[in-house]
Image (cartoon, rainbow, N blue to C red; front, side):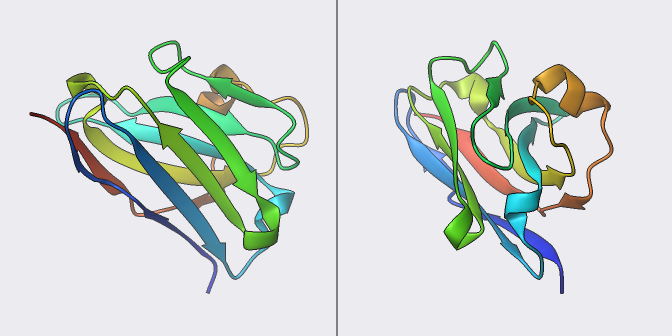
Length: 128
């Protein structure tokens, strides 16, 4: 079965850190660019970060630049999102998605593209 599964969410205090993982099964994740999205209650889905299949191209939303880092380990079929200096406004369900894209990745392009695979999401709550 081809699927993406996120993990690593939870409750963290402002200023804290979390690392999200997105693991693919049933297909080779290296052939796909991967994006992280988030959706807070009552808000539209937002593109957070993306990474090319090789890992050589990445992009971030302005709201997370300098705080979040996306990376991947293709040997483990996994993409990570390291989130530091978390703020209450980072609270959301975080989703990873994979899409066939062989060029430089950008948030703007990712938001217009149809994803091939979606995970079910992991909840991140930033609160004291």
